[in-house]
Image (tube, rainbow, N blue to C red; front, side, top):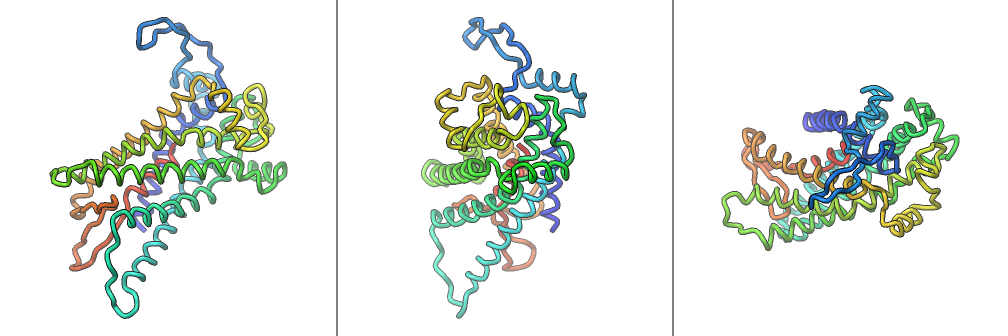
Length: 349
């Protein structure tokens, strides 16, 4: 219970701190570029036209709506984060209880220890189900969050309150309106998860020397690096999901000239592919998200190897799960810190 509460508090704090960045990122993704380009120099010293940076966009928003305006859409985003953390934790807890029952089993027959690869597949499958359930439950709040942000472009006030937004979406689009952009979001999460865990397993098993004294830390860092590449490869799913969530919803930011009207997420994907994702900040957003994933997983590594050492003595299994023993003799408790941290990051960014 205390662990779930700490995750909710940590996730809410990260959500609040990252809200201005998330706000600017969403506006750029839908093609909102209100500031003219400046003359600057690239890494080779040549003069080029450059669009202003993220902080310039944030100052532009603050100059219109004030500093409080940078936190537009924060309420549904907080609801999404808290609900997602609870659902994710409950699903994983259910799987852990089922695993304990299977391990005890009838007849007290000890089962053979599964291979590390089988364990990775099992843990990743459980994490996939937990994340998918959390995404499914929280997606309506995600849609409201995005539309609350995008209405800044046309200076609309269609999605102001949480309850009013729910009523508006239901009246205009029905139940399906709450799940606009859900499929690419789920696909992106699933592909990113399997890529990250599979690459981390291969690196930890075949590339790292098990005799190194800092093996535990190196394995955690390797998972951060693989998470970086996985998030880069799956960024198009994030972009398509966000565009579909606001597309043709009655807002200027979801209509031409900022965004074409897409018939489906596949149509959106194909059009972006033809244009080679011509938004000027598409690669920047991809790199930014990837760096945030990496930095946050590295921070998680420092927490696991530093602050938590006074609680218990950790041991890392080949699958990447932290296992530690408590004060009670022969009592082993397993906590998958990586899955909880990654979920908090997903909700925060």
